[in-house]
Structures are given as C-alpha cells and as structure tokens.
Image (cartoon, rainbow, N blue to C red; front, side, top):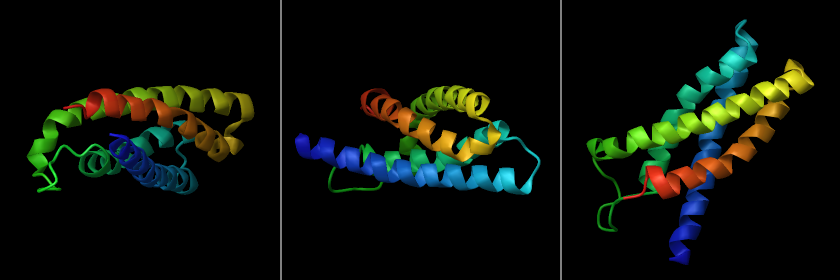
Length: 137
C-alpha cells in the first residue's frame, strides 16, 4: 500500500510538473505575443494544460488498469474525465482567484512569480481531489 501511495505521489508530481510547464509556456507565450492580459491568458493556458494533466493522471498516476494491461482504450477514460475536469476547474478557480489577488497586490509585472507560488499552493488540493474522488474506482 505504501508503495502504491509513493508511486502515485511521484507520478502526480511528474505529470503535474509537465502540465504546469505546458500551462506556464502557453501563459508566457500568449502574454508575450498578444495584447491579452495575464488573467485571460492564464485561463487559456489552463485549457491547453488540462489535456496533459488528464491523460497523464489517467494512464500513469491513478491508473485503473491491472498489471497485465497498462494502457486502456481511450473510451474507458470517459467516466473519469468529467470528475477530473470538475476537480481541475475547482483547482483552476482557486488558482485564478489567488492569481488575481496576487496580481492586484504585487502588479502584473510579477505575474510569473505569482503564478509559481499559486500553482504550488493549489497542487495539494488537486492531488487530494484526484486521489479520493476523480480517479477513485
């Protein structure tokens, strides 16, 4: 049991880091090349990073398959998709609220630092939602 929890925690961090990197790169790219504000760019970046997050957590972190078949057909992920989307949206709402608060307190020029801090805070919440609700079978 401890081994499973350790494996899940490790994969959650790896997948989460990949999704966060995608989110961050999309956020910075949008802000750098468009006139879209960091707040709106953050929402757009969330939608792009969601697919990385869901697929990684479904197939790696909270894998529902037995050891004989690691990868499941995509349609078997559908029951978990709605719950993970709800979990992710809840995390994003909390993220966005804290992001906007940070932007108001420190200014838009610090959007990268604010995003990094907020993302770290929200990570714990999304792990708990994924483990105990979204991917619980």
